Amino acid sequence: MKNDLNGSKVKKTNKEKWIIRNRFFAGRMIPVVSADLNFSDIIGGWKVRWGINRNDYRVNPGIYSLGNPDDKADVLVTANYKLTFDKLRKELKGMNLWILVLDTDGVNVWCAAGKGTFGTDELISRIKSSGLESIVSHKRLILPQLGAPGIESHIVKEKSGFNVVFGPVYAKDVKRFFENGYRKDDKMKTVRFGIMERMAVSPIELVLAAKYIIAFTAIFGIFSFIAEKNFSVQMVNNIFPILAAFITGIFIFPAFLPFIPFRSFSIKGVLLGAAVSLALSFFLGEDVSGYVANFVFTVPVVSFFALNFTGATTFTSLSGVQIEFKYGIPVMLVCAISGFVLKTLDIFHVI
Image (cartoon, rainbow, N blue to C red; front, side):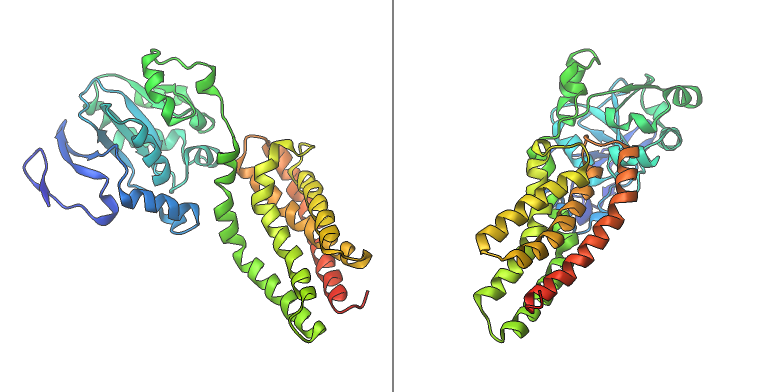
């Protein structure tokens, strides 16, 4: 327990250690947040990356104080996905700002803008419910550039009186954006999707795929044991391509994404899956039947995971993704089933 600026007691829960205190300003109590991430924030972010508590990692929507802002301080608008909120406040250390958090159902700005939850109606509603007009004396809101698809600036101006200014793509450029007089240079406008950003999606893909990896490994392991009647090198050879298919789709594909030919992600996956399957069959000394079985199973698995990355990249369009899913998924399913059958027949030396 500790005193806020109004002298009352503030109780902080374990989930809100990032709230330093409450501040009485413009006739209301406003939470003051820290720009430093504590151990719980870091662990929470790591857990989300691995799919733990991913659907409930959010902060309450509303107005927050960072530092000691006055009525002339800028207002930054963000989503209530805590990972997004944490990244923003961490980059604003030493600044005095207001942060207006929209209710995006715990979804990041980019995805929420596409879904409409980081949208015009929610922004207008949050301006009114937070009492923003009585908190600041200006009419300027700074929104992330990636939120632009969900916001109709003229309607926000018409219904709330506030002007929308789209800031940089990344929170780390906000300070420089202010220093440049609310102007963005080309670097601030550019969405970068380097290897670290691409690989950041891999842990959650691994978690989601874990049950399938375990299931297929167990099935082919049991089949191999029955066929060979003991634990043998051939048993390892039968299991290894299965693991390699999943590892390739989850980790190798995003790492080498920009360097694989073709725009279509599913076709990129086919090429990578074929290359890995060929290399593995050569390394394991497979005969023709073993190579064909590995190929027909590996290619659709890698292609499927490749297609999963379309929602996390800047390389795709909505129409392109819809076409790939419409025609690609049925083909992948048929190939995967065929691969499973061929792999089983090969294990039992039927082919």
